Amino acid sequence: MDNPLSKIFITSPVVIDGGFGTTLEQWFQLDISNTPLWSTNAVVDHADLVIEAHLAFLRAGAELISTSTYQCSYPTFARAGYTTADARCIMFKSVQLASKAREIFRDEQVRNGTPVRNVRIALSLGPFGASLEPAQEFDGFYPPPFGPKAYTHMDAENGNNFGDDEVAKNESIDALTLFHLERLLILFENEAMWSSLDCIAFETVPLTREIWAIRRAMGLLHDRILIPEL
Image (cartoon, rainbow, N blue to C red; front, top):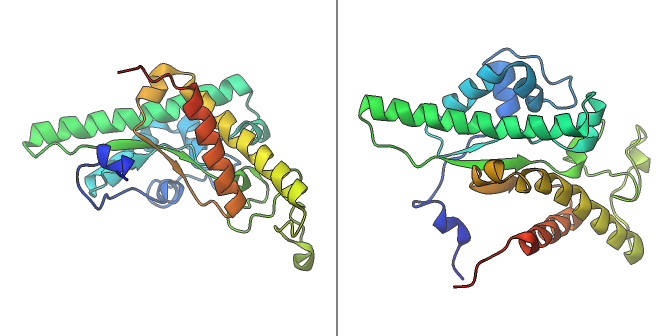
């Protein structure tokens, strides 16, 4: 079977950026770790620094940069005080900033007479756990219907396994599917934003059933894409 990524990346391995929020904090001295949106908060208040962070990765050799949307979901935006309309606009802006950084870097290469690198942009999406407080992208203690029970400070009471309860497990997969599909559709339904993206990166997914949900969401998204007959 052909690797679909080979159509995007000519050479292998591919160097990707990483730790975008940490970079904004450590390199650019932004205090964003105490906000629900983390790196996405910088899109609103420090767009210029988001571009500079992308450029820092590109100048260091990255071939794939990620949008600052890891934390993005309607519930997370609501906790930060934004409406659904605001949420869409901020996610669009994040894509635009990554695209702008790519353009600036390309112009730099042309001016310097260096070979132009084929930079790609990935839509970064964290797991459902990244929308929770406290965040659960590592342990996966999700509240119903996304999981068996929400995180508590009593460690002995935490768990993320449904055991033999297949009904609850399937309901969890259904809920997680809708969560991920909803975020994908924000970008998909805006043609200009969607066409700016080269791939999608689902990051730090802690649960196997959430991976199944993501695959299902991508399948449902694929069903909405009209493929012209040859």
